[in-house]
Each structure stands twice: as C-alpha cells, then as structure tokens.
Image 1 (cartoon, rainbow, N blue to C red):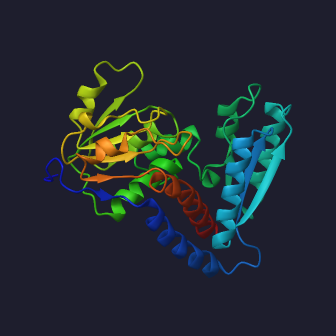
Image 2 (image 1 turned 90 degrees about the vertical axis):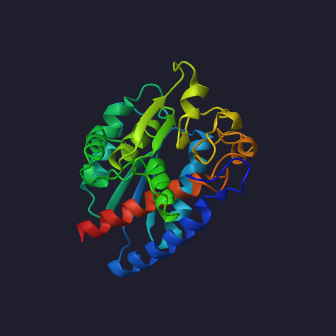
Length: 283
C-alpha cells in the first residue's frame, strides 16, 4: 500500500461484484439442464421476525438465478431430535443441494448438533465443524458465506493479500474465525482481536488490512487506521451503520467497503454460488 493519508480511497463495491457473479450463476444453473432446478432448503425454527425476513431474501435471491428455495418452518417448541430428523430428510433428498439452518435457533435446540448433522456436500453455509476443519487445512469445502464473500470481493479488485498483516476484529465461528483462516491460507500474517484484547487501537494501527466483525456500530475509528490500509466492514447495525466509522476511516484507507452495499450483497451471493457448485458436482 503506497497511498498517503487524505488521498482518495476506492470503494469495494459488493453490489456491483455480486450482480456480475449472479449473472454468471444464472447461466450455470441453466446449463445444468435439469427438469427440476436444484433446491436450497432453508430451515427456520420458530417465528423470529428478522430470521423470517432473511429467509425471504434468500428465497428471492434463489429465484433470481433459477434455483428453487424450499422453506421448512418448524414450530418454536421443536426439539433437537425433531430438527435432526428434518435435516436427515433434507440430506437424503437428491434434489436438495444446499441446506441452511437459520441462526439463531430457540434455546432448547442443540444448534451445534444440528449444524453438524448437515451433510458436508450440502453444507453451503459453512457451519459444520468438519467443513471448518477442511477449510482451515485448505481442503476443498464451502467456507462460511460472509468470509467467502469478502475474499471474492478482494479478489475482484485484484488486492494482493500475500504478505499483508491482517487484523480481524471479532472471533465468531461464522465470521471472525473462518475469516482469519482464509486470510492465513492466502499468506497473510494474522492478528485476531476480540472483547478481551488489550490496547485494541494499537493492534489495528499495525494492520495493512482490517476486517471489522465485532457487532458494534461505528466502533473502528479513523485514527486507528494506518494510512493506505484496506478496511473491510463486515458489520451491520440498525440504521444501516457498520462496525466502522466510515467517514473517519475513509480519510486514511486505500480501499474501503460501504454499508450497505459492500460485504452484505456478497454474503447471499456466495450462498447461491456454493449451492450451484454443489449441484454441478452432484451432476
């Protein structure tokens, strides 16, 4: 990174990259030539309004490229055993090429057991422990969709990752941890920060690449950013606010993602891409 402080930054436009990928995916689905399109099964336990909205969004995204979305909504009193039987049925259905268990599940559900019941070839959301292990070792698998989308977005802008010091702020199993592993596999040097990290700003100031995934609105401040660093905001908070103070960080960044329109569109697009790839492999 050679850009100096206060020079213009470049937006990492996830919407534009996502649209391009979806156009390609639509052609790939058509090329499968199946009488019945491949199916993405979305399993929702209970009636969490936010989860229902996400499921609808994913259903519309499937339709836009020719995939079929199968919504399986279970009552809030569903037990873990009942949920495992539904997952087994989806595993056994050859038309279903991807299975998505919407998070969070009600408290009585053993969510880890449910995630790990998903067949590895249908784990298009990267939630199984087996899939995480394969991804970490660089063995072909479907990574968690948001980190996978970030990698595709960086590649679309020809960002050279090898040798960069990447600081990931957040350690969730579906974002921070897989993000760190994917970057490590691309020859970055990784620092993972979290709520117990001391002197967080000092860690961030050392980063060539910052991935903010902490779930705190406008948390990462502009003065923390090294001039010329790449800033990826993987957060989304009420009011269309990310985890990064955009205006402050943009003053120093060479590349930065907006919220909305940055990482968000890439997440659902990678879910579609993984499902299409699963269908192609099955054929």
